[in-house]
Length: 403
Ligand SMILES: Cc1cc2nc3c(=O)[nH]c(=O)nc-3n(C[C@H](O)[C@H](O)[C@H](O)COP(=O)(O)OP(=O)(O)OC[C@H]3O[C@@H](n4cnc5c(N)ncnc54)[C@H](O)[C@@H]3O)c2cc1C
Image 1 (tube, rainbow, N blue to C red):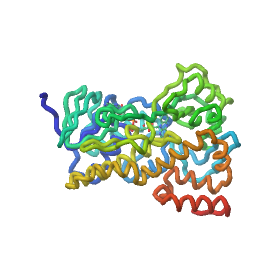
Image 2: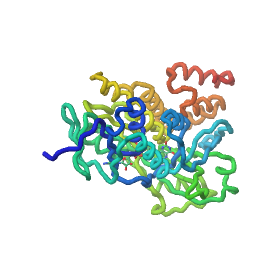
Image 3: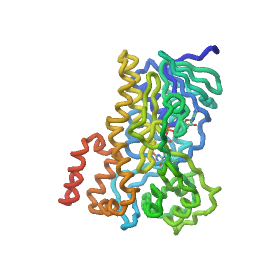
Image 4: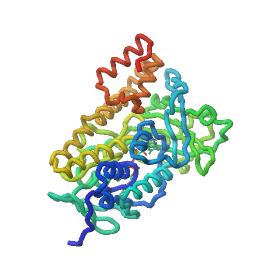
């Protein structure tokens, strides 16, 4: 048997989930500096198909980790969402979303992780994973690595997940996107600091929405335009998605040629899946993220935080700590929120979607609560469902602020 390089914690994948887990771990156990290896198949800065929208909860996590957001970004403070029933306007307020380019953001996060003492082994694809009673062995492009614990943070197509959890069902949707140069003066997204969503494509059978986000590429204003479809069993073709995207933003010159678009899978949350075994935890897209909007960066950080907490307790001798991770992802605040988003996706993208879009139109206050909950503001996502619903109903019926 080939000799293996040893460390305390191995991570497959150095994207946001793997890097966040490493940073949270070192923050709670500084002695792990130099003892955590992240194996990454690419080399930072590497391209990543993503709109790069960071919700406030992600910025709060960066702040907690002491990692500055030191890459070019565009802040938006308002939004519009067009539906079959009419448009919902989110009026200007606090920062709703901060838009970055993922190659720059992930590379900056990797640099912060290296500074903290994480060893990132690049150009090192994980090929095989074997779980033993007390350790996990990983065969990679750069040899064999062994550790008592492995975090599978290798994205939607996770090899770790396939090797260890052998899932019998997969919920994987898709995002398709293109970047278009614009003039900042004539683009409403830049002028009014807004992002635009369009859910009208639900009527055509898309289980998702189209978006237009302002962003900077090489310092130049661009729109990142895309369409998300969560359909897992019969993925919709570009032939259907691209015309729906062009319809959503008819005033923009979006090409019809599918070669100009880039697509990537998004694994969404399945409450019945397993997220932890004896020695392996899944995080980020490998575990499954938001089914409603396909937002995954904040969950990458939340999973990273939860994984670090469980691993730290495990290293202190708590043998049940890794099983607890499974519980947190299913039934803790992360699992509850993702289950609610899965419920919302079934309603808003299901056959009775018109009824639910009509309900969403009822009250501006209720819309604001929905957005605050989504963005993780005021700890609304940690609130029990009954209290959250009571607040929402109060807002709709009494038309008063319930913050
Ligand atoms: C078109 C589109 C738009 C999106 N827009 C947003 C958005 O605006 N906001 C948002 O929050 N989310 C968005 N998402 C989702 C978001 O991109 C993901 O949820 C997020 O990247 C998950 O982070 P992660 O670290 O789990 O996975 P990833 O970012 O995919 O990172 C996984 C890492 O593992 C590496 N890797 C993969 N396989 C291996 C292997 N075998 N061995 C070693 N390394 C490996 C990869 O190279 C990569 O670096 C979007 C997704 C798509 C497709």
